[in-house]
Image 1 (spheres, one colour):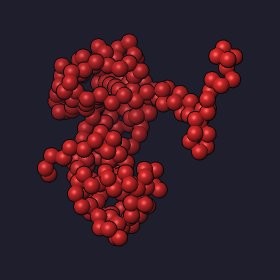
Image 2 (cartoon, helix red, strand yellow):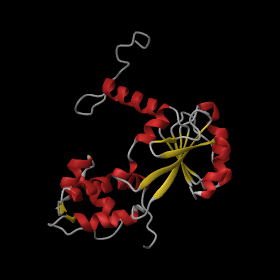
Image 3 (tube, rainbow, N blue to C red):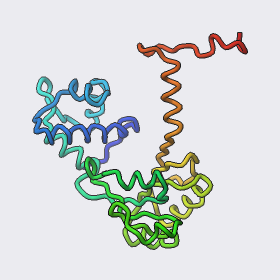
Amino acid sequence: MAEIKIPKATARRLPLYYRYLQFLHDGEKKKVSSAELSEAVKVDSATIRRDFSYFGALGKRGYGYDVDSLLTFFKRLLNQDHLTNVALVGVGNLGHALLNYNFRQTNNIRISAAFDVDPDLTGTIQSGVPIYPMAQLKEQLRAQQIDIVILTVPIEQAQEITDELVKVGIKGILNFTPLRVNVPDDVRVHNVDLANELQTLIYFLDNFNEDGTLINPLANDPLLN
């Protein structure tokens, strides 16, 4: 497939489209319109058509999109036609939850190794995943040819461990710690801050009307009036 330059916002929506197409395929649905996709994934149909247009003619006007053909295309585009192994560093409460999550239900992704400092955990198998001591981090990542890591360690250790991951050749980090870790330009980090997302949700609930208009949260603040 020729290299295609697409906006980052579009790239972030591609897995969403893929997951819903997989759902339609499992339900034996043969075709879907951009309007139907829009209702399901909560992205306006014009945006969906624009996203798809980056990849050429994926559908026919007046007919919609062939579910099986589109699913096959996105599966190849997102490298879902082969298994991707990732590692988990930090097997605390959140780490355990991620081990129990069935990534392969909708994605061809598997946590194949996990690492922790707790001697009660290392040497065991949790949810089918072997837990290694941190001393074996470099050895196992190289041996298993893993270049993507999920990071769920305490904030005090996040940068130090990230530095070790970079040295061993990790190219992608899904960072669940509150710290925005520093990495070289050739390493991509996606930050997932659950507390921040919850605070953002609370802010929108408190400060926006149902029609999307902003309520002035400071209008009745005695300190500003």
